[in-house]
Image 1 (cartoon, helix red, strand yellow):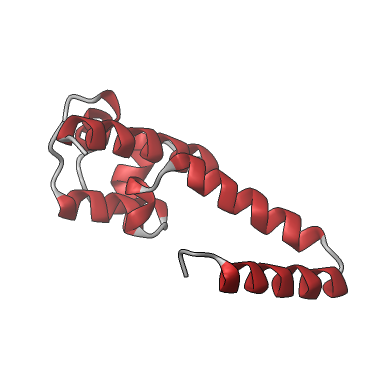
Image 2: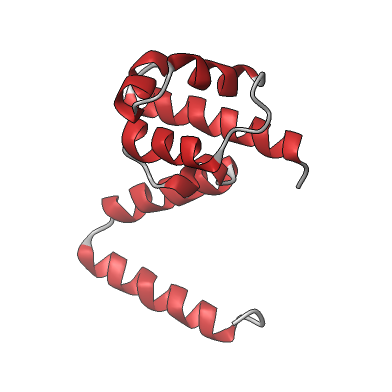
Length: 112
């Protein structure tokens, strides 16, 4: 993956995480202990090569999320969240059947 593509992914994921947390760049920067300009520059694409330690501070201290969240495929994240929500609404007996079915499917998968 190209650096520019990664920078755009990080900016998109940062913006989405801030929205989920109900916060803004200035507050994230304050919590992370960095200058707010740094967060704004990442979001705008001006900072195409942010330092990993800065991104770590933004994720962990500023947003309270794991570092990898900034690099995750947003479609996979949405799918995971939807799956967890759906399973959470199931009755315990249905969750047990679903788990057994998922395990059986994984056991027969050519990728396992």
